[in-house]
Image (cartoon, rainbow, N blue to C red):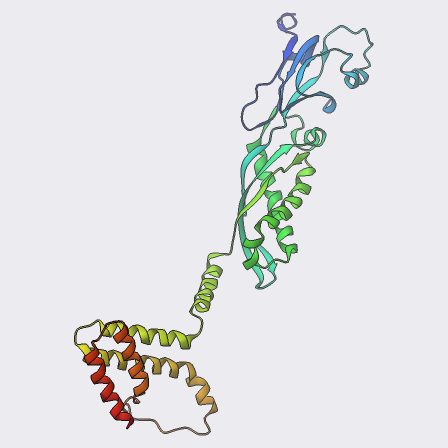
Length: 340
């Protein structure tokens, strides 16, 4: 008797949702709602009436007066007469239709895909996405059930697993090489989103936005890729050797000692160029030689430098004002005597 007197009939039903809330079941004793009660549904919400766990009626944004006339499905399920004036029983659940934005996703472990250029490789990927309730009935049946509340945080681990599966499917069928993914990032995001939409739809969810922010290789694979890039940047080793020789000449010209230092710099650059050239062509020359040549003495003198090439380099230094006109003329005359 005391419990009966204590029980209060529900006259006003509303939900002031908190950030991250997806669904909330209205708690009241015996689920009795007064006939003529006021239901307030705000923008971005929907209120559903459940009969034994099954969706019966739902109301969109607005102020609604509840009676058997505007609850046709629930009234039919309960077999109420049109003149029924007593309180009625039903579960009332509010759902938030707002977009849950700024959610992060990432691959817990690298996923293996077949790359068009490198073959089987392992990739990591990270990004962001958003989701929202799109269909109430599958969301109730497959996720909410008899729960009193559901938040976005409790649902995120399941959604991330679905994204990882969709990511593997999209990358495996894209046919785009890893090195070209950056140029096709928007197209890749759209392709993955289409796979994510299929996974989310089974729970009554939609994925309004999906972004791929980063795709990377494992550290050890990336290190090898960086080495290959460094070699391609160097390019022609022959030209690289010439560049190093010119650098050595210029550095010697700025040192103390005048032409003596210049001569040492030229000799050093020539020796460097010869050594690198011999190192690059040694293997092929040895393979094509008709017979082994006797070893040369370790103290054999270095080959003479071409006088005309030397004069050209000296003229460059004169242009740079690294030497004087008198020094250039003297050295030029000395070099020309070798030619005569």
